[in-house]
Length: 470
Image 1: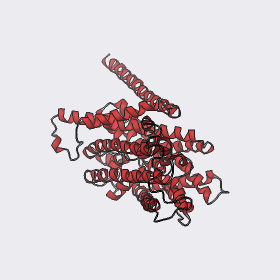
Image 2: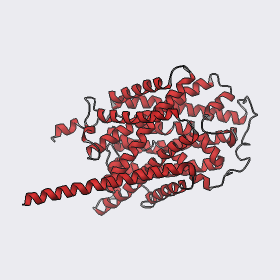
Image 3: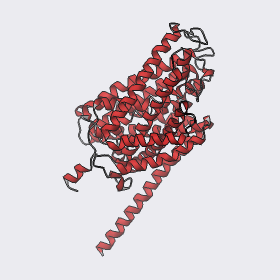
Image 4: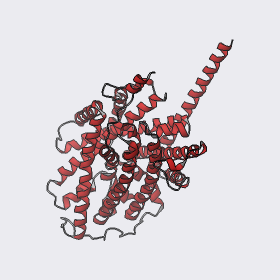
């Protein structure tokens, strides 16, 4: 392939710093915060939820700095799958890539279904599948037009969510202190925080509900996937990583404290958003409609991010021979159209979840997605560990790296250890055990498939060499 063809088959670097920042922020502030935060408090208590999100934030920090060192040194679309293939093993990269693709593509389909359900608030007589189709066409068009179109849409989606969370925090503080009177209860101050203790179900439950936390934080790794389409990645990626992490933790911890102060843990669950409930009892006009619109925006934002991530990952894998080569073709607008179409068709399978709405099914889907991300995070930390080892061994100077992981090798090792510990605790939770079996089983199956494929390729090559020698 000549230089012109190679350039024609590369993605454009059209994302600006503001797009990258909002992309990573938008992928995190969504269903996990607006719907899942109440469930986490209900299961582990206020103290358990706060501790869980803090520990999750520490793990997220480790993952992000590991990803930052790799992405700044080698800014490519596909990110951690490419790094795992190069620095751990091709089999590991293949397995991580397909596992993340399946989880992300399926999550996009679930978000389309959720968006259709939310539209019934305004149009109760219109079938859900019609709204699903409308949103699928809408997000497909945004992603098909250009990378800039996707990034611009995500910028505004994420902006609405950030403003909503800030407004919630301000109203929540005013409600706790009595500045804004609540309709059905006096100003609680902090009386609801620990009527039965901060850890009513014990400390161990924190590690079981950690999968809820990781599910909430997933999406941060989109910074790495978008590296290949970002202007000046050596400048913008470190900036996005440094600013995004602390703002995410602040948003989540502040929201958890406010929800815990206003609502007893027993009142919080999964199917009703406590954000909507707080706005209603605080007397905010048209609260239900406003929050329903914001949650709809959050759902579409997550679906938009998942669609982008899955498509780019599939494109990157096809470039490396880990997916059919047809998915590496780009449109005139530099969009991997066939990869986008395949991702869309795969996501449509998840629309079947609209007929099943039980809590158990939601937790199962959440745990499968969380397990996929947890294994991906392990892959990111392992890739950085091996990259730095090889870099030093080949005579590289760590001082020349423009973004460095501190406390190497302890930080990536701690990250891997924490993630393995969280996966281990899932074996003791009957609700999430099935998700663990499916997730780990799929990863092992991918590893075995690649090994078998690799062995057959070597055998075929050896046979051809013998024939040529004869």
